[in-house]
Length: 210
View (cartoon, rainbow, N blue to C red):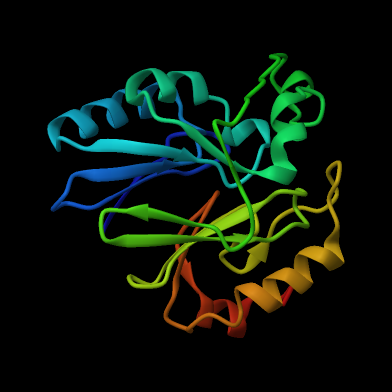
């Protein structure tokens, strides 16, 4: 499995393209792309003959769905989100788009996820870890076979997601990280919604919130 990250935003939100070179199947994780990102994503998909099977949302805040319409246009892929995140995705006041960027972003997922669900991508399985606290329906996508974890705004390098926004819950976030992420192998690579990649073992030793 290969990971291509597109990031040219002032808030450094990451949009990941996760794909299997052999089959050409892939998914896009989050849609916080800038116009420059979109051109890069479109060109990369075309040049590498990648078939996008889904747009996987880690959560519903505006900076991770700001380019959802454009991503859907170039991929024709369905949108996946946790069931507890639907209200946020469909409400511009809750996803903060009406307040932060003066746009009413509204997303209706095509497929609803629950904790423990699995998505098949070629011969790779992505397992859904529901980790509320930053948002009610925040999820991580875990590829155990390849040791990759896409954490959204749940876990960052030496930090965690904010819990002072609407529906945030600090103790819930900390408890879920401890139970569902810190129990994974130390060499599991974590790819966050903002900033650079880290590893579970590194966060056990260096993350002051944990």
